[in-house]
Each structure stands twice: as structure tokens, then as C-alpha cells.
Image (cartoon, rainbow, N blue to C red; front, side):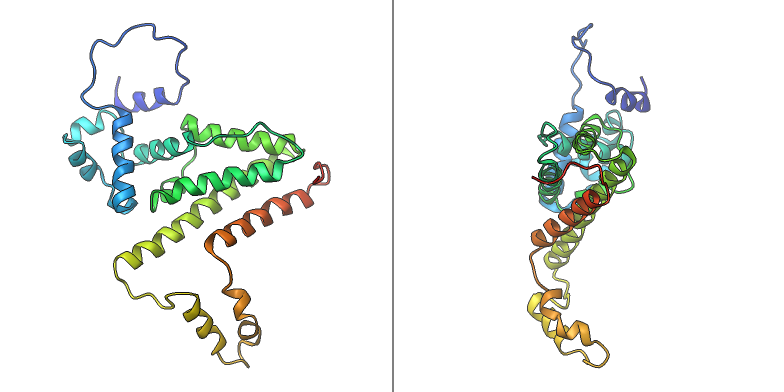
Length: 245
């Protein structure tokens, strides 16, 4: 079986029983590859993860590594799948669907933030890993149970997952710049507030007047606001949705 065939095989549900015992144990496993990759990202950030760096951490050669993963894109898919496997999905409840959907987004956000920059691996990636598909299946079940039309539900899931990934990626970029000692201005809310309030009021009347509102809130506050806005907007645009209780 070649590398691409192995990748395809991983996307199929495992059989109920092993019909044939393995004749030998591989020196390294896919689980070890993924675990080691996550360790590198947790310690050094996603940008530090290369196939060469991973091979060195596993104390093996590139040929051995490529026996388990096809390429970096395949590794990215495995990484996102591992994080998705940690999520507990609720049984769809039409009376609490907003909270359920928001909870899935928050859980995924928290997984991404443990591994700086890893959400980049989820961008422009069509989910085929079974665990990633399990999460989208769970989100779809929540929305359909709430009475959301299938097309709206599908695009909502795409938009929410994209926002979660982008939010986490932005935070990781800011964190990496700070760690690297790059002088980024404004450095914090105080600097930004000063910058906005000292703009020429004639040219920026609304910005100067509402500078406090423009700079308010923590990243989590803004995340919660945006996810709520998207979900509540979906409910308002779908007349057959079960109302909030």
C-alpha cells in the first residue's frame, strides 16, 4: 500500500474487529508523529513545524516519516483531526441550540489557542479527516434540529469555523511578534486609545468620539460577541427556527 492509499484508508471507519493481526510493529506510528508535531507547535509555534524538524524530533529520517504521512498538507489534516477528536459534541436540543453551537466554537477555539498558529492548518482545507467531519456533522445536527434550512446551516458552519480559525490565528501572530521583540505600535489598548482620540476630530469625528467603544473588550469578549451575532442573525433570518426560550 503506497502513502496515498494509506491516507485514504485513514478516512474510512475502523472495522469492528481486526481480521488479521499485524505481523510487525512499525518503529513509529501516526499517533507518535501527530503527538510529536503538536509538542513542537506548543513549544515553538506552528511556523517551527517542518517535515525536517519533525523528522529530527522523532529521531528518524525523512523516508521513515513519509511512510506515515504523505506531505505537510496530510500532516495538517491529521493535526486538526487530533484537536477535533478532543471535542465533546452535545446531543442536539432545539431549545438550547444557540448555546450548543456557541459551545462547540468555544471548545475549538480553546484547542487552537493551546498550539500557537495551528489554526492556519485549518484554513483552505476541505475536511476529510473523520474527526473533523464528526465536528461538522455535530454542528449540522444542531442547526437542523433547530429548524435551520440545510443550505443556511451548511454555510453557517463554514463561516463559523472560518471565523474561529482566523480569530486564533490573529492572536497567535500578535503573540509571536511580541515574543520576537518586534516593536508593534500601538502596543496595548492605552496606546491605541490615545492614537484614536488624538486624531483630527474634523476628519474623524466618529472615531474620536467613540474611541473607547472601538478599543473596548478582551479578545474573548470580541469572540463571544461575533459568534453570538452570527448565530442570532441566522435565527432572525430563518422564520421557521424554533424561538429562544
